[in-house]
Length: 456
Image (cartoon, rainbow, N blue to C red; front, side):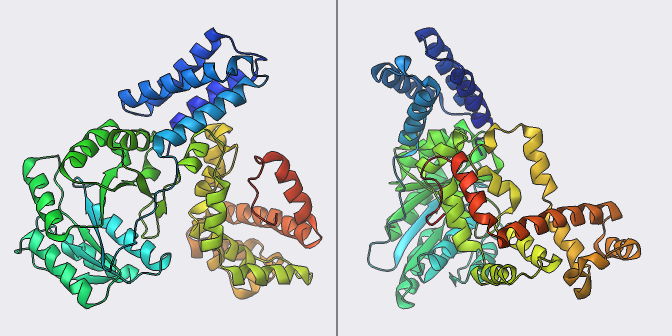
């Protein structure tokens, strides 16, 4: 997300860094580049105009022109304004109400409402420790109710069963009563969508809203719809008392203008980002962290939180203990590391959150992500015997051919994996001799001040 915007802004800032001071002409040129970058990212024109005017006024008011480091001064201003546009601080879901807290999702067909209901149910169950019930009021789309029932089973939420021949507002009202009877903490209501905004859909959404009076009414919008997202958001905001926005398919849009437009047009905070197809691919929206990523500064805090949440700590401690005892890092250990990385979305997802990655050429980024094809490497190691994983030195010609056949790969792929494994083995050998401290000291010089996790 935001890759095109990041590339354009990084290029503009890079040009400024080579100059001792900025003239008004240079500032005008830099802001013109920022304006073009925002428009190419599909940010709504009124939002772009306000953004540029504000940055220009602040730049002149804060004497950026006489700054010794004009590039950094402008970055700070643009970062601050991006945070302002997207919402100054995180806006969590308000669960401070008498249970069941009713959350209603509305939006166009295909925006990802039903999937978002499943993701939100899992989020509330795992991170907020709430008992969740879900219900579908979509009586039009074939198998919409079955889809939500299956999602509820996957994430461990209760499902309120209804019939497609019932009225949507009556289904919603009955679900509230059932949620009360089952002592559910939260009830998430999925509503029907249309291919475009029309009076019938809005009337139905209003009717459902009046029947259940939800505590939270979230507008679900596809990030890839660009400026249309802002127009649709305004239509829904005029019809319903929205409390927030869920931006879906954020991982599939390199432009990301919707995130900058929706907040400004509706005045409602973006509460969640959908960043993948899996049911755990829903994250709270942090304006400051996303602004840092847009400017190529990474998002180390989110990466640390993700590691804390997804990495198997017992497995990590087991490996650390093994290395401390002087035992060799073997292919089974390598496989476990690959599985952990895959659980976090792969190398590509991790690179997006590291500082400075946006400044790398596209070819280098793509090669790095492709070079860490963890699924293929896991398949190769799975085709090895326990002896081969424990003692990699025994893997030679005939064994390589057998492993390649078993994993559906080529012998060259086995050689490539063994080369990467050898590099990992050397790295872990350094860690076992105290090299970790030296590496973290080197990293500290490269990361922004205060961005290392506590204790590092």
